[in-house]
Length: 129
Image (tube, rainbow, N blue to C red; front, side, top):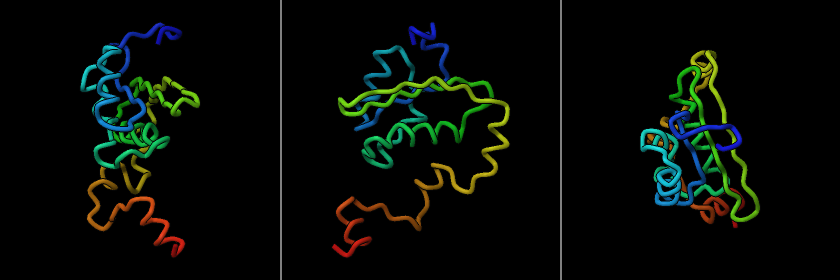
C-alpha cells in the first residue's frame, strides 16, 4: 500500500489469506479496513481452509459483486514460502463479463446438489484408495 501510496479508504475490497475467520479479520482491522471492505471476500466459513486457493476464492466472490472502477487489494500468504499482493481495478466491462458465467461463488455455496467432502474422502471416491 505504501508503494502505491494507498490508504485503506482508497480500496473498495480487501482480500487476504484465509486459514480461518479470525486471521483475515484481525489483519484487515490492523491495516485499517472496515468490515464492508473485507467481509465480501471472506469465504473460509463457507468452504473451509482451501490453503493457497483461499485468496482466489475470495477474489472470485468479490468479482461477483464489484462495480466498474472499484479497487481490489488481494494479498496471499504461502505459509512462509512467500507472499504476493496485487491491487486490481475493475473496468466498465465487469458487468458484461459477469453475465457470461454460469455459476458464481454464491451459487456454488448454496447449490443443494453439491456435497463437499474432505480430501481423504475425495481420494477414496476418485482413486478407490
